[in-house]
Amino acid sequence: MRLSLGLFCVFCLCFWLLPGCPATTNEFIGDGGVVEFTPEQDSRTQWSFRTNGPISAAPAVDAQHVYVGSADKKLYAIRLTDSSQAWTFEGQDWFTAPPLLEQDRLYIGNNDGQFYAINAADGKEIWKAKTQEAINSGAAIAGELVLVGSFDGGLYAWDKSNGTLKWKFQAQGAIAATPVISNDTVYFGARDKKFYALQLTDGTLRWSTDLQATISAQALVTDDMIYVGDDLGALHALQRANGDERWQFVTQAEITAAPLLKDGTLYVPSWDRSLYALASLDGKVIWTRRVGAILSTTPLFYKESLFVSGWDGKVHQIKPDDGSILANFPTFDRLTAPPVAIDTRLYISSNDGTLYGYQP
Image 1 (spheres, rainbow, N blue to C red):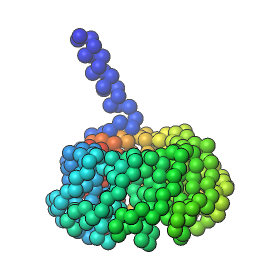
Image 2: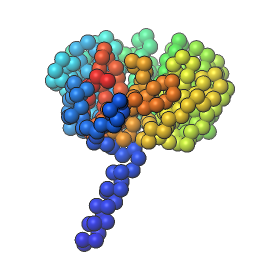
Image 3: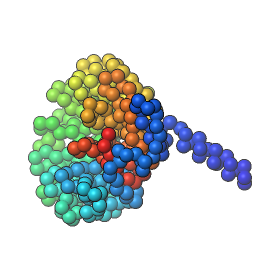
Image 4: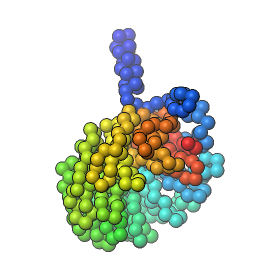
């Protein structure tokens, strides 16, 4: 029995030390070298709010509140001034999707397949609609429509005022990413290995492209191109007009987030624990930075730096020019959502159940 317990302890220790496992200390890299400290000791931590379950999606923020869902089945409205709770809305299952805020309403899906429109002022339900499986992705709004994908393979378009279903497009695999709406077209990938372009008004298929791999990542759509990663680790550059592929760049593991485009450079996060800087024109590598943690979210460009969330529990601050790591901010569990910047503060959702606000 002692031997078994000892082996178990050794296993747990080794697992904790694996790259990509959550960290409890921070490394600040500066003139004084590397300094380690916990979030409580970090003077940059200005604000925090604790829930009773992991927070896996990014918050929505307005002038007075930040809104975030948790695996404790609640959606929270938290005051920006003092991080006190304004209200909660309780669903039937985990909230793992990011809330979408438009004017005085929040739109969010739940793991039980329900999709809610909620009054942002008091947390009261305005309407709800049902899909057949979990909703893990964010919603998108265009005109009078609110759209979201479900793990049942449906892309749903509801009247945002009352939840009336306007149209539904059925893919042959789960939809895990937020759709992108540009002009009169909706773009999204699915786990049936196809990337779709639909007519916004009625959901009619304009074109689809078989990428030969399941797709969990949101797309980045520009004036003439679409950039989307797949679950085998390839980033595809597609022509927006017809979906034809212009170039492809392959990493060593899946890509589950949209790249960031800044000044002609694509910043691509990968589960191979690296961040890539590519020329958007042809996909040529500018630099590669091995962060050492799974990167499953889109980088944020803020104050002339890149901020990328990692499964090591840290937000890594990276220099865009050469990929050098400038600093990082720690939490106590993996980060599966990008940070959100409001004014001088970054808000970070952590699977340790806490929403952090810190000033880099």
